[in-house]
Image (cartoon, rainbow, N blue to C red; front, side, top):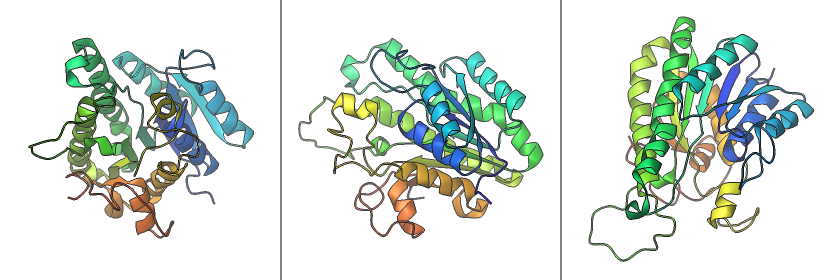
Length: 283
């Protein structure tokens, strides 16, 4: 029997990158997957390839079940509609993966208030709204899994004095959002533990090669040796979705560190292995 047979999963940001990888892996393990993002068809995004239509097509070609639901994470009504559509097509949600995000890698002096507000709406606020929408049914069933995708960017630089740094990819805003999501994760995990619901945060151990990181220059090629090997974060997301509640709930973990811990890989690199994690990952 497949590991997620009979489960229904929502994955946001599933048109490309990590979200697409998680959606495809979950579907290959038997889950009925609802893929959510703003980009419905190829060419809709002005910068990046990837779309919900492509993700769903790839899943179905491999024998899996999936639908795409165009979703604006900044709008509450769109998030509510996503959950309602999932119930209508597949039934109540068993797994929620909050992966969608909006990233402005700029120093604080250059970010506009509008950009700040929109990105926080897509980040922590959308995570809250989707959790709020799926929890009532999870509580009724006394089971459920919520995985919030975090980032090593939430690891602060520590106290000064500081040396001058390159501000090309400044991540103060983005890191603050991910730190907020990790605190939210552990608090929610404590609240819903009595209902048998697991809540975790998962971050890649290093930069993942995606259309976004290639465009920004954080990754230089699809096989960039400095980056985390493809599929590692998705494998870790699968592990968190199938492990017993008491082993994983409340954890803020890094992909390769988690896979190494469970013996799925022999060696790894990056955050959580040869670099310390966030404060929440160490609790």
